[in-house]
Length: 118
Image (cartoon, rainbow, N blue to C red; front, side, top):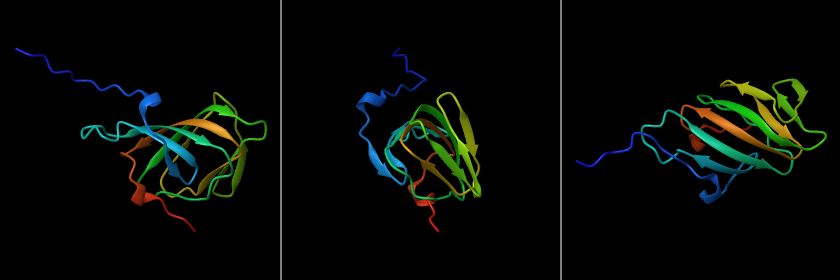
């Protein structure tokens, strides 16, 4: 009898980047039907466009940041640095300011139709 794996592996070095309002995202587990969410490695090279989501919660973990990296979250602007993490619930208008590389954990699974701009 053949054993079926009950786990999934993603190699971000093999995933092509796609343009997003923040820069370029590599989206892991998007092709796994049973996955409850997706994990993205996103490179932000310039200021992102302010946007929000009606359904998605995003959690940014900052891997690399430029010296003046910031996040705009509704009316607040916060400094960010590697090792920090911010959870962005639905409805929070947000954008990254300055160059950075983040790990973005998205629940439910990322849906490009749930990106809203002012």
